[in-house]
Image (cartoon, rainbow, N blue to C red; front, side, top):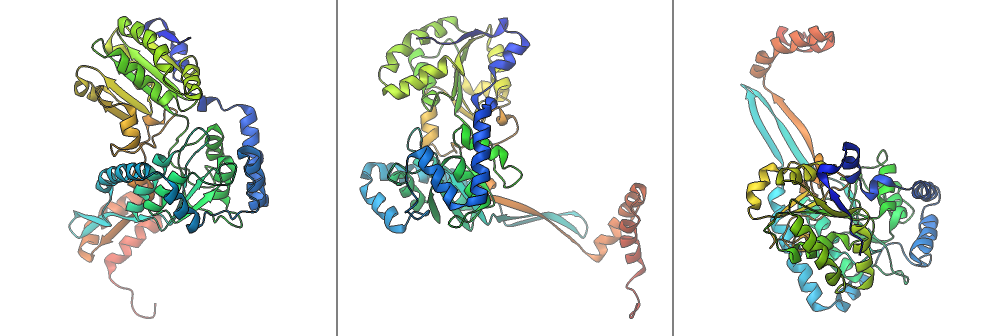
Length: 441
């Protein structure tokens, strides 16, 4: 089994920069061209183009089916779902609700910044959002409840889900159950770039939305990039990525298991072990082939592709160098598999999610610990945050000034306005010093 092995200290600046690239940074020209074709067709033809691309890419003939999933379909899917799966979704969604309810902003918050001068902000929910739930490489009810729960807490008026159908035109039953559980108003049987286009432009059957969220393939990522000026596409959420930062005390078997978690999402994922311990690196190399035998063949192939592609093992000369790589990479998921993870926490500048210790694998956070699993990828953890209730809210600045408060502001406002050359700004406060205009003027 081939596993990329890098020695950080020996890499040039250009090589270190290259190590931080992801699949989403290298959208092939043919993907970009295909996405542009899809966007233009959906905008011009609406439902007909959506059905055509769904047949081409998903193998589902949906031309004779309604775009939206009916209540009867959702109820039937819930009945067919194994009780254990239903209960696991309920359990996990409740954990997510407990964490995200803490993020709900107050409706109106004002502070008296000067006597008689009140300023602050008011938070209101978005009118509509489209939540994308992928399917191509698995079933993702977790992506459904991770998005829908904060949308519900925020009070979004119209919450829409788009998810690819199977070859019979059916949306994954666990996704439908999670959608019903979490208050989603509409579910549409469409995926890929055509789903993003439909949500952005609107079609005869799918009304447009104000914001589109959710992870997806390179095609979905390319579509969201292309539509950034048309619709709010939220935080960048492309192929999965992770780093396990481990010291010499880490258990190599657990490190190996955790290294496979995000890698099994697909060959365009990224997964690195970074460690100052050569002994640990060698032990992980020895453990991985045996553990891969326990995975289904397709998942094992994904892991092999990732560890020989956008992943591998990075050996550093010190823990300080390991932290340097982590902060340069700004991973979506980061696990601190170290003796004292809390001591390292202040030294992590850029990571979407930070898991402390070897009893906190990525999988527990992905499903049921309560924090969100829709996290910025592609290095955007340097400036973006995981999905939260705040993504479904917007704020308006609110200002109220009393007559007495205006007296205190008049001088500074007039001075600054005239300095910047805005006479009307100055006159608006200066004239008010003269009292009300005579009647009839």
